[in-house]
Image 1: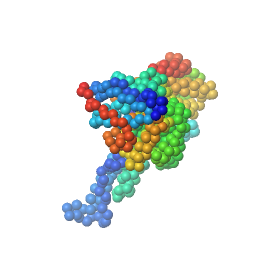
Image 2 (image 1 turned 90 degrees about the vertical axis):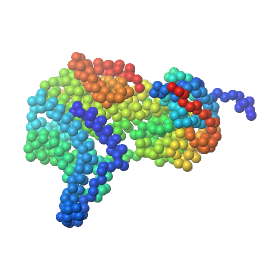
Image 3 (image 1 turned 60 degrees about the vertical axis):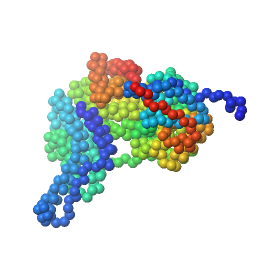
Image 4 (image 1 turned 135 degrees about the horizontal axis):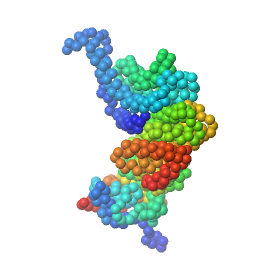
Length: 220
Length: 406
């Protein structure tokens, strides 16, 4: 092991003492987590324990009440410039995989590419997720699995340093699930990181993910 | 015309219903029995009465599934026609024969009138011809002639205001005009544009992408509302032209009066479309958040989409007003500058009103009120300041838009 490899690395994503309230109830209280470059972290826990909420906060979609989230050194909920830097360093697939239904698959990827200053999805990504057949299809006409593939394609464009994937295996067939595992592992091998929520222990095993168990929902 | 927003919301509801319903089609009626009638059945009912009952049931199902949704839309048009008739035949002292005579002898007025009805009625005709429920019902072993008869009758009845205008105005000659126009409506309603080949869009930055996405939402979600809006815009322009022409106005005075009339009458033309734009804005919210797109960029995209609609509608109204009023070059230039200026100011004001009400549960009603308030502000500015009121409206609109939160 070289000296450089032995040095402690800054985490790619850091969550410090996160607290979230939704609809007057505390959903997450005092959650801390760090994701290093090259690491895949699987968030597990009971239904309703706040896995999706945690990922939504990291992705910049749900505002936390307290705590701090940084991605690639920039605060997701900080000042405007930091927000932009942090959010452009992540790719998010929500649990519902519900981008605007009137958009075609190709248009969703073009929006993500324009925002990240990236090109279209690579040939490897298109082949792995079967994106070519979804390019001219409206998202509202797609099945859940197809929408999930379209959203995964959007999340991988760039690619961003951190992938935030909420139940990414939902609706995927065996072939695409294998492709997803290969893509995520390759992403981590290239120095990226992945934070994903899943109930599927086999998937987390296949990915070699470090498991972070969410505590039960706090009272009140 | 004031019902257009209702019609538009209805339209979206209908679209949603028809989209959600294909797997739950209307009650399947029993097919009419084949074979010779008049044979008594075991229960004593003749096969003739069974045959008639089956046809009646079939007609009932067809009417509920296909005709009623189309008539709901036609009802909105009727109310709009009643308001337009009150405006045209009320203060100007015109009679139906004056208008139809003008239309027959003045190509501009004729074209404006014909195109207006065409654009206003095509969405209703399209519902009668191409409703998803109708496509399903046609696959069932039901009678062929009855639906044709019911659909044809509904198509004619839906056009009653247009029919009344021409029959009262021109008698049998008017019937011929209505028949010709009906053929054009049927042709346009039956037309299916070929599916465009969707290439990979090359958007340079997020602002350009969001603007393009808002326009795509308009094209894909508000097609019928846009067509109807175009028809109402022609009507608004024709009314403005009549005001200018009958009052012999020229120059800045003509521009102020014409632009004020257009600003008010355009409200029903675009208010339904506003909700579609707001829908696109809300649906892209989480994507924009997670992609780090600035709130200002999102507001700018919304304003852009509204401005495209309002400037487009105003340009159509302007063309109709020019055809009807036949103004001199200077008056036309003033009218164009003031009308388009007002459209720009109204876009900014409408965007502010829309964003201010987006979190409300009564967003549709508030959008309508917002559009009416903006139109009233336009009339006020033009009334107080004349043609310069357009600049004041733009300044006020810009000030309002700058306070908007995405």
